[in-house]
Image (cartoon, rainbow, N blue to C red):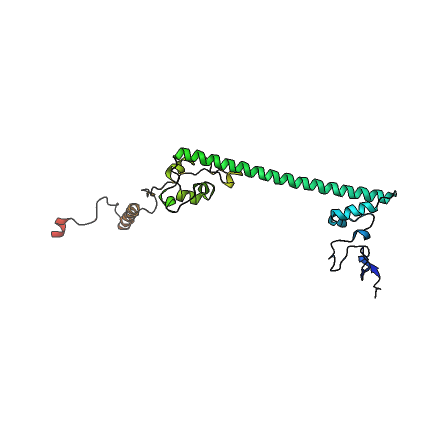
Length: 228
């Protein structure tokens, strides 16, 4: 049985020998940090990334000697602080770029709305849309099914040649509203399954069974023959 005399970086006693000089596993730190006074001269990468700015500053003040290890420790802390500053500037740039894109998209939606309002002379909703008090701005950027349900004929005609300012349009998708035909589909004559074609085939089968030619006249008896 191993002796319970191994200490971690803080100085707590730990049972496994592999925990010597590692992060504190106790409930006070939960394997996340060590106290700056107990930090090693050369910080492990895990400890270097998780240490706070104040802890790194305190460690930098501790390693002000002239040895090679202390010079390396100072360079290590300075590099980590520079990395954190660059990362913070990068996050700030991403936030600024996202905010700029949002402004550009809002301007595009407003320009499309004004153009559609001028083209339709303000008649942007049909009777059902006016009854439901639909917001035309939300209609332009919403689903295509809602647009077809509540948009006026003038607005539908306008966005047949112009892209609706939806999120998909900013990703490069084609958001023009294609017209849909509402005419009933006509059944074509002469295709398979038509009643007249089926009747002609029945007459041909009957003629083949009787041994004669298919009759072109009706098989129904005339009125004079019926009287006889």
